[in-house]
Image 1 (spheres, helix red, strand yellow):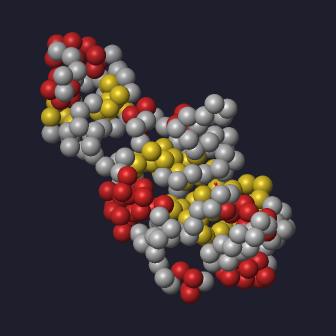
Image 2: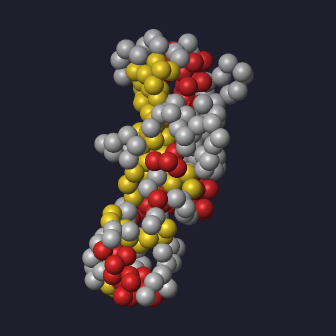
Length: 242
Ligand code: URA
């Protein structure tokens, strides 16, 4: 543990005397929250300290952040035409990269990290990480739809999907669990069964649940949650059980 002003002066940001004013003026955040107390103790190994939104010091701590992505923004670092998910990411996390994508119109769980290996593992088809979606669609899913998902949907362009799980939730609502990430996959799977999607939200990925995080908000994953992501791997019983 170390005092915030000492940490910043050791990082060469300003002289200690000036730093007190800088901190008191509210320009410094610790883990995304303003800290205006120069002698506040911080954990220099784990806390993310930022000045005017720029992370200071080592910044090599492994971070995974979840966002409840709103509809109406694209998963990209920058875009000429549309708002991006980056606009919903607090400045201290601007150096993180999104793990995979959600469509512009899809809401829900989107993970960001500074750990390239973790991102690669979660995205690699070899690992087949499970993702769950809540969908609202035309019509009501039935036994034939469940069977078609379990066999692997054939999309309208002939693309064959891996087996997936469809769980009808009543009229016009379903849960879908997939282990791959083709372009607009869930929308296209349901459309292939004559059930175009009007609303889609990802609710979990690799065992991490979106929970009640409000739309547009972010939070850091806890250490046990990150460990959970470290251990996710292809579950060969997935297709047998369902
Ligand atoms: N499937 C879709 O159709 N859209 C997404 O954003 C993710 C999965």
